Length: 355
Image 1 (tube, rainbow, N blue to C red):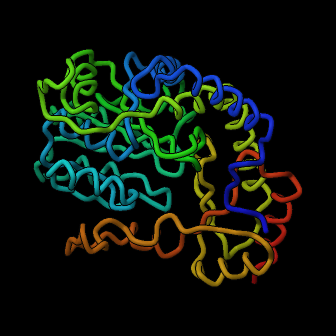
Image 2 (image 1 turned 30 degrees about the vertical axis):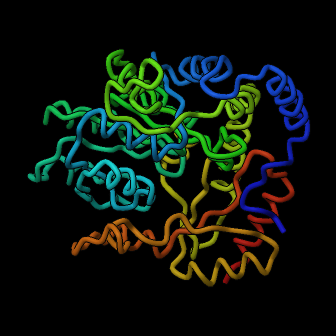
């Protein structure tokens, strides 16, 4: 069975990680240590931001950004993943939901520009690993005098032109969940900013709001990226560019060779900007296609079956037809960097034979 992703095929990298973990264990400093600081600095350089703060996960990263800015009404696309909604709820803020422009799941920017509802921020989510039109959203935010926050959980190694995703907002959030392009061996996240005061605020907030031991200066939580995850991620950073290029090779193969009128692919922006984190396809008979792939030895997954306004906890009595349609038709096929050419060819053949 071809998996939707595989975390243990790169044995050379796993061996190097084992060696580094052994060294780390002998060092004896496991929380807020030198390895975390080294990774924060390396990652900041990679994404082109001045400051980064390692936190427990990307949901916490968004929550901390929202609380640091004291946001109350946040505009976002209904096709965004569930953690975006939870982070907003955790921050005691309200979701102002917009429809997607098309199957990309990206915001319909025209509707955002024309909307008269009061918002105090916009959340740009780089869904599937493609680049949201954050440069355009930044212009709207500047016109409305509100901040832009970017969720880059799926877009490490994704660029809009020469700017890495996260380069337009006051804050950006990143995920190191194991299945991400840069994934650890457990949960992990990062907050990035170019604003020194906001950086210093997040540093306090991730560690109980304290700057000196047992003395809180501000609100805070316990959300620190473990140093052992930093050790793992420092090793994995060595290959992130190469592995993203491999993912893009797989996307190119899919784009040129999947030829079935029942299956739709994403448009130009996805293939021009994506880091290959997820490879969505769309089919009116999504569930039937999923079963067919499994019968032919191919795992697939749905990202995401329910738009935010159709989930019980976030429910809103509104109609967002594009987001609702996307949720019923999307299916993700394997695109991880260790996928072999023969496996990709088999996936293509099976998809083209679907009737």
